[in-house]
Image (cartoon, rainbow, N blue to C red):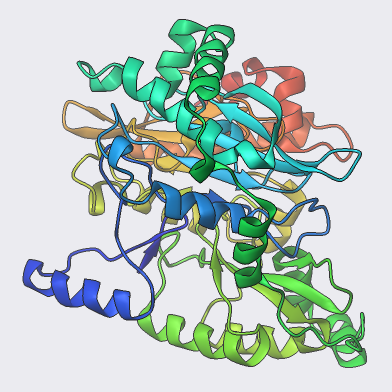
Length: 469
């Protein structure tokens, strides 16, 4: 399978006659392919640490599921001007890229403890990348569905249906201006509220019961002597702890990121044997839960600290313990020309060449946090616009070329990368990336991230080095 930036899984090349059986098997375990394409509300994504993050004010998962049930087969919004994507977070740190969705929601609490939502609208990537704008600073919980319905209704009525390249809500918001768009939404909301759309505390509580925390051990030690001993003795385990293990809000537990970015594997790909092994590990050590990330990795959300060494050993046996999360080789990459009929160029081979060229972990760790994202076409399924380094494949007279961007970001400080210069031929991409990184090492201040160096200095010093050959 291939895990995507929509937190979904793709199965490529099934025989057409096998698809009904595949869908039937998925349905037996409450999985489906409903609204995974088409001009409708797509699957709703969320912070992968929802429910376990230390910086979380509100668990967004119940609201995601309420929204999913509301939007599935919604008769009014089954044929929108274009596809529509929603994302939720409930934390102070945005790990769901809410400003880069058609609508992004941040659940938060007022000083009085009331739940509400910061609502962002009109974000997105693709042919016309846009960072979303704030539509509502604190939408009361009760109005979540009704206000969202009003946003969609305004978009459904006024969105461009003649030109698909101008059909996304981001184009409508840009054309009208966010103030006028807000006025239209507020006007519709005032006129169309119905009791069925009011999100009552009872409805939220009933849904939240389906996301109750597992049976955490209140006596679980924050530190385990064996884990500490192995970390001091084993550099590989120590590296994994430092890069693939995240804090947890429950003392004695951690979240484990399972990297799907081994050097010899396309980013996001996983075998059936690896999935079976991961399911067993989750059953034994993580309450049977595995989550997908929009970074094309997986997550064991709640692992007891005392189990970390055992989990690492088992992940390593199936090549799922690559300690490279948030480094250069933790790349986001679309399937590209290998699988996608829309692609203009190959993307997976470029990602693998970069992974092979920068396989020294000490060098990766010295470079620090670098988010590299690759797309094989302008639709930007690889999120290249918001990569610290973004790479876009283009076709020049039948040959693969690659445009490089620098300075993008997708979190709280979301920004769009800027094109460095002319596109590179396929064989020139890796050397150019090497020269860009060498410039960063020479120019960075103490402790300065790659992104911050680019923002401080601009593109010119990197451009001079990248094209110096």
